[in-house]
Length: 280
Length: 279
Image (tube, rainbow over all chains, first blue to last red):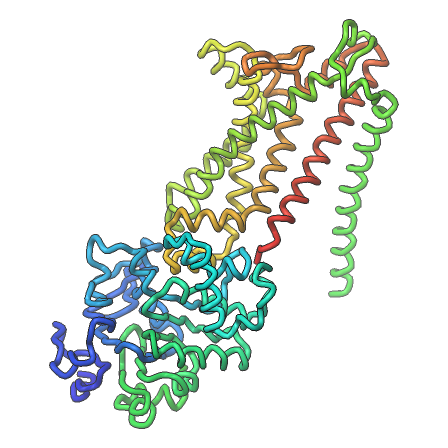
């Protein structure tokens, strides 16, 4: 089927219905990678994701691209079990995060979500001060000591490059920041829960070019420590920052591979059409 | 043609606004005009003396205190029940839950039930339980009256809340309860509006307290004692043939209006405090 000759890629889909992991693939699949096996998602009997098999390598940036409504966001949401909130969504298949199937019975949803820092499309600061926004995560996850919280907040505000901008007004409302600053604040807030993965759902689509650039630079910095998975609309962005690309169309993975190969030497006709802008 | 259409609608809208303003000013003006001359310091600091209803000395402190006790108690009861219910149907039940729409439907029906029916129901309940007309009876009945109002208005603002914030909170690993606590903060102005609507309806209602709270010339000192209320006090004074007592009824109405105004302004003030972090 698709990509049968490219199984050596760290990122691949298996042609066989049963998921067999090639030996070569196992090398890159250490405990930090995400492995999706035979994932099907239905919303109201509508087949949204069709038999997704995917491996996401750790400490890299993987971009999921594809036209609107192809299931990119749905796929991202399965990773931190945000579909739990909508009962009409039915999920079958396995998603391994740290070698643990997160859809197994008895898996703690909170722990799963704590591993994933989500950056939404539009920044959504909590109705609190800048400080409390970042401190919220550590607080609900049981850190009580004031000193430790202060340290965490400053550390992550510095990490996203916001500290110098908001220094001296960390007690003022987070909603007074500019939208680009808010998005970086949301990133700091997500990082403060100490996740292993960063999920970005078109995280830069509501930002101006300058703020977008800052966020992109952060993503590149983040991949040293975290596994970054981004859904993006802009091909150019994917090309700029991604290490691996997953191209989806109508709920299926059409092609995936390293950024270079994907853009320079796409295997599928559909991919070539998409890249040339025949549809979007 | 388009221009004319625009103009006509503008006139209609401005007209509606003017009618509302004029009516409001007319009502408040009449009440103040008739009531202010009789509004003495004694009115608000003294309970009715002997022969108060015949024009002798005294005030309506009994009714002021009773009304405030009853509305405070009723607010407490209805908030304790309303907030968890609204949070439950909005954040815990799924989006298109049948149970939630059933609850909303029942609330809409309760909303339309006339207050005298609540009064009669409260009275029947009290007879069954063997309680006499008392402060407690009044609190419970007024609580029942204002509960649907509070729930429905709080529910409406809660439904308008964007899904972004709950999702952001959940993705940070909040439990539903931790999420609800933050959302409640965001909802504070809406809650204030709900409280205001409920107070406005509850404090001015005479029919609910007619049988359940009773009437007395004293300030109630326990929940089991009967309590006077301002609407009933106005009613009794207006029924008097003595002219002086009638104008005191208007003075009592002025007091009631001022209480509502104070509550309304303070609610706005406090909700603007909570608004500090609102997005």
